[in-house]
Length: 187
Image 1 (cartoon, one colour):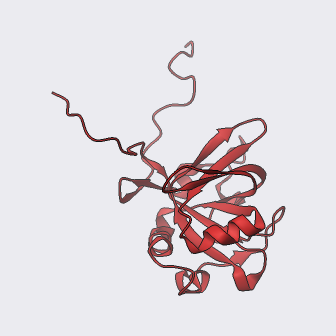
Image 2: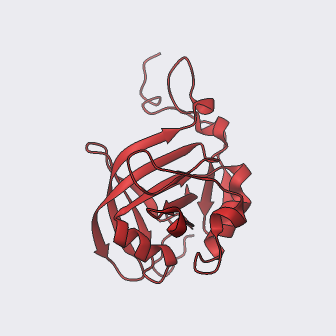
Image 3: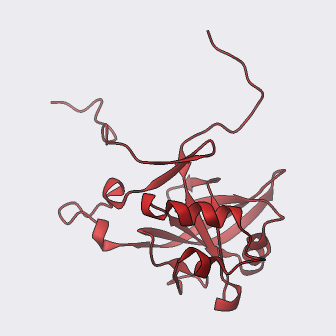
């Protein structure tokens, strides 16, 4: 037996991301978002959806840049804290024990403690209802070499201890089940 529920956003899990923004240290801010994703591979594009009342909304809209910082199990407390406190009231980098590092290709900082940061320049803002979608070009990816497999050059998500969000809860990644195309690979 299956139940019909009212329409909702139950596409889970999603990455638990710390979005950093601001062009100068005095306006740097960070907030938690899981309404993020890939839009296109070539050119590389992604999005983040933000409520207009969020403190960072105006910062990102003014600077047209942001950085998506993928978080880890080790950073779960800081990730949650940055999602329930406002940058209007706190210096969230200092309070959460996070270190802003000047961006490489954008003015917004990335977070030193995360294993993977994606620097983005906003291409378009689409008003959708409760959230506006910031569609962005990916300009640079900053990857911690501690999690790059020396033999393959690939980023090891499991070793990095990546954090995901699922319907109000945080989880780590489980064991790898397969690799793209493994179900049809000839033995």
